[in-house]
Length: 362
Image (cartoon, rainbow, N blue to C red):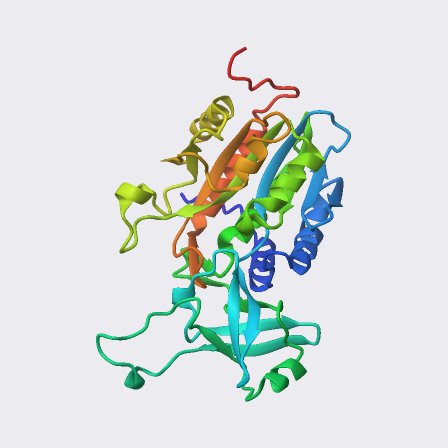
């Protein structure tokens, strides 16, 4: 008998709206407002920091503080140069992939509103066999239908305008959620669902829970760096995406062997506190939640690193969601993995005691 889905129709409506909304690094405010509106009924308080990271809080008066965290920003582009003929050249805002850009439709965000444009590319007929140029940062460009620089500027486009892809959320074969910016707004969705389940199931936690949606992860974990100083938590459980390595052209020897549909991925590495990781594994085993394992080297590359090494060291762990085609417009995650990440965080929180000591040596 199939398990009852954690994600409700109302939750799924929010997820679709949340993914379709643009929230590029440094310009996350509209998405953060949307997220906060969704989570408010399930929490007691919240605060927003100076750069837009949000912490929604359950039991805010408690001295012992536990964070569950995701990041809210998506990769994008900045307008960098406008040619005399009205073509627009770009700089990355985060790890945007230049190779997928040609023929994509985009939205240029201006003070006058959205301006539509496309990434142009020379027709196949005009390219020489064996001597074709590949897409590179210095040759991809936007065409917004203008023929002069002045005409572009009259639309409100200027150097520094942010550019996002025009792609929308969908469900593929009733198995995968697909869209741009699942990295990592799907994480924001999952931690919000944890808050909802705690509220609906009337779970009383013996500590303050800070459900944190951080900005600016894609440019160096900056939002998390600020939030750990603001909250000064005792424990942090971070969720982000990792690579599903089962698709073509992925080298498992380099990237590991993780499968979409086979559960959350738990990471081993210097930033991951072993006793906290053991607690999460115990929760998974007790509740029969499937999980996979991954190994990090010097760093996880996620907000886990920002929490782990701040304020004298915060016991931190990483629960990742396998994702296909990261940093493209068709990022894919398995519905069952989403459910199981939510369940694993929810169950792990209930194993943490008030003032629990996670030190390596006791």
